[in-house]
Length: 546
Image (cartoon, rainbow, N blue to C red; front, side, top):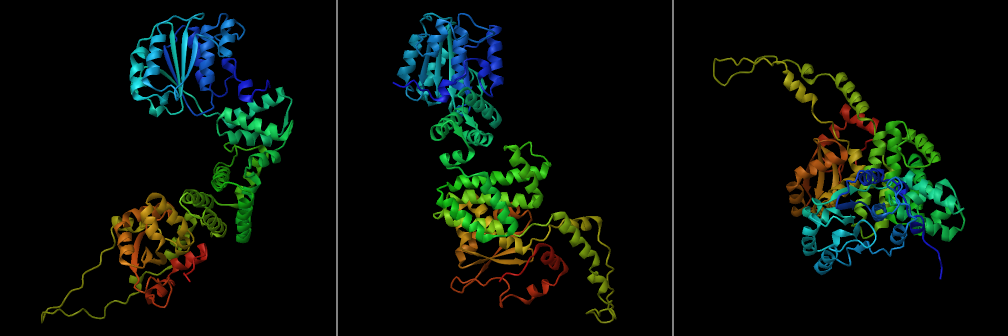
C-alpha cells in the first residue's frame, strides 16, 4: 500500500499562521480563543479551496488542545492527534450534501445532549451546509439558537445566498477571500523547496493563475505537473501538460494588429484549433491581454498586472504602440465575441471573422483632436446667412396699398447658442461599417430576438445623423422601429455617439441596395463635400460604402 499523499493533504496547515491569505479570519479566531469569547456557531463562506474546512479543523483542535501555544494547537497531544487523524469522538465532520434530510438533523439534535468524551468542546463541522433541506434547517434552528455550553457548530459553504436568514442571524460569519496569485506562488515555491523540486518562476506563475484563486486547485495542478515532468519543471512543459495558451500567442495578436496582417490572423486561429485549445479560454486570455495593455497605458506602471517582471516590461513597451481608445475598442470587440461564441453553431467561423475585424479595424482618432479639427473648419466656413444677398425690395403684401415690413432678425440667445454647441458629434460612417458586427453582438447580448431580426438587415449608411438600416419586409422594418429607443441606447454604448436608427424598406425581393448606389438621392453626394465630412475622411479614413 502506497504512503503517497497529494500536496493538498500532505501540506495542510497545522497552525493558524499557516493558513494562506485569510489573516482577517485566523487573527479574529485566535483573539476569541485567548479572550474566552467563543461564539456557539460560526459560518465560513467563500470560494472553493481557500481554507474553510482547514480553518474549521484548526479551530476544533485549538479549543480541545491539552497544551495550546499562543491560541494554536500543539499538534502533539492525544486530542490533537485524534482530530488530525479523523478518529476523535468529539469532532464530527458531516457532509451536508449526503446528510441533508430532517432525520439526520434530528439525530444530531439528540447527540448534542451528550458531553464531549475527552475535550472541552464537542464540535460539529457541517460542510456544504447550503445543501440541507428547508425542513432540516427548521429542525436545526432551536438547537442552533440555544445549544448546550459544550457544543460548537462550524458551518462551511460556497453558496451563502442559499442559506435562510434565520440561520445566518444565529451564526458569527466569516467571509473567506480568493487567494492572490503571489500568495499561491509563495506557497508552491516553499513546497517545492521542501520536496527538493526545481521549477522556474514562469511555471509557478502559470500554475498559480490556473488555480484561479483556489490554493487547493493550484496544488492539484502542481501535483499533475510533477507527475508529468518529474523533479525538473519548466514553463513549456506546463503549457504542454495543461494545454494552456501561452502568453506569447497574445503578443503575436498585437503584432498582427500593428502589421495589419489579416492572413496571419487566420493562420493563428488555425494553430489554436489544431492544438486543441478551448476557444473561450483563448478569448478570456486575449481579453486579459488587452486589459493589461490598457492598465500600462492608463497608469504608466505595471504594478496592477499579474505577470512576471519580463512580461510586465513587455506590456509597458507594447502599450506605447496603441492609443487608449484603440485598446478599449479591442476589449469591447473581444468581449462581444466571447458572448456571441456561446450561441454560434460555428464558433471557429465567428472567431476567424472577429480576429480579422480586430486586425483590420481602423485606428481611432482621439475625440478631442477630432472635435478641435471640426471647430477649426466651422470657423473657416463662411456664414451662409452673411453670404446671402439682402432682398432688393420689400415683398408686396397681399393687401393692396399696404407694404409688408420685413422683421428684424435678432441674434441667437445664450440658451440657443448653448443648445447648438451641445449637439452630439456626428457619427462616422466608416466606423459604424467596420464595427457593425460588434454592434450586432451587443444587440444579441441584450435582446436575442431583436438581434436575430437585425442580422437579416443591412447597414446602408448615415443620413441626417441617423443610421440607415435596409429591411427586406414589413416585419423587419416594424421590429426595428418598435425598438428604436433601445437600439439608440445600444448605439451609444458601442459607438459613444447619440444617433437614431431608421428602417428603410426594400421591395426588391429582399435585395437591399447599399449606400452610394445609383438610387441614392443627390443630396447625399452633395453632403460628402461638406468640410466636416471631408475631415472625417482625412482623420478617420472614412469612405463611402461600396
